[in-house]
Image (tube, rainbow, N blue to C red; front, side, top):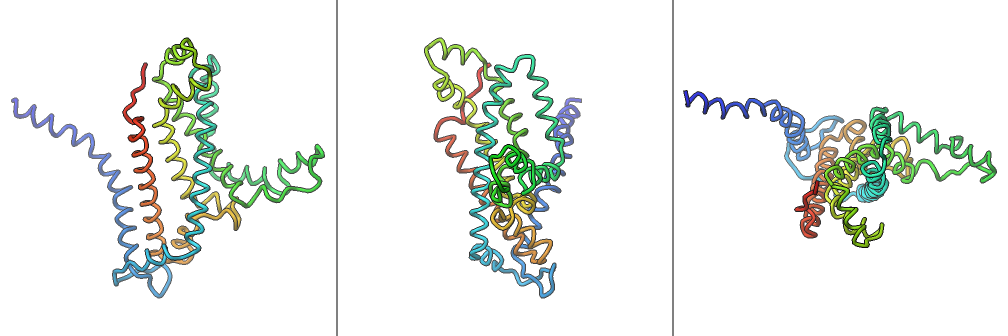
Length: 295
């Protein structure tokens, strides 16, 4: 009888985790392995074909092409501006929701959550209609006499792409930082105030150290999704706001150069992994990773 209980205890966790293991293998390991194989093959004579011999020519061409380096810089800057703007806006909103919203908290959280269910493309088209030559913003400025002709620089550039990406990811980051502030007791802020700390000092010495790790997580989350995006730049970026994800997408769907697309995708994945390791090392170096929230 004890033997049966031992077998039950050992098989139980495996059976429970088996669906998660299968999902990870099918959704993450298998695509990664497929991309890795295609990235070292040779593009065929006809589009959408790849065959032997095995070679690193796709990586060499991707890394040496000047246009790819330019698009990589565009992606990095767009991802950085979108990520830092989203975190800077979300942190005060999350702080207000946690400590000052009162009875309005549930309503605001409902509105924030509701925006997540809006279609990705609908939000992109909304910004295109707002920033366009005959859009809402230009029409409003003309109607009040602020400008005589529509502003041309609002659309089809990095600015338009960044604004749309901030709008898309803002609800996620607000909820993430709000959850991070949940275990932080307001007694810490009140104690700092009683000790003579002003608003700025309370933020820099109490709030920011406690939410540094979640804020860094949010930054990486937005940066990776923004820098690798290929839909938003196609609708709002024009020639000035195009990013590396667009070129990788074209390699798969338009030119049919699968090895080039796979090599580009894996190169971006490695770059994002290095960013994650760098941020993790910085948090550990600053001693912020080991902080525990006080309830």
